[in-house]
Length: 128
Image 1 (cartoon, rainbow, N blue to C red):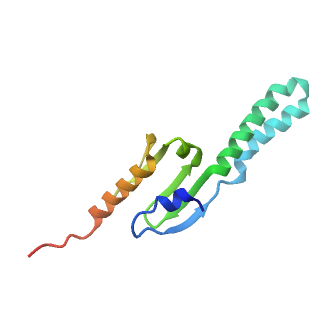
Image 2: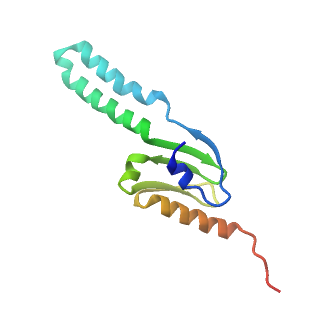
Image 3: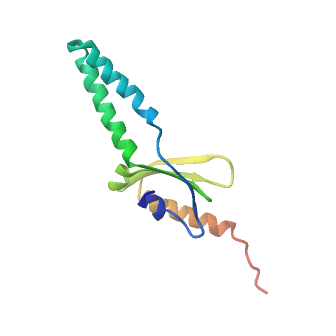
């Protein structure tokens, strides 16, 4: 898939599945746009709002990378990455995932967390 997924991989990490968003994200904005056109002049605002939503969803669809690795789930909106921002979800040893929205350098943060978790899970070798 994309460069973000590949660049976020830690040591020994492999991509198991890559995915795209489903086309269903276009249904509501598409329906609003079509409904506004059917209504005519009275539906102009509805058409404009639906059209703007449709464009936003198209940008989201084209710039989102989703993947599952043997260690984590990667979900990244590339538009956020272009400005050095993003959200990261940290999975600990429990079942609860902790989302951390709007942080700087999400790739570096994620890589550091994954490296720390790998070191913590690595078997320790006692010195004799």
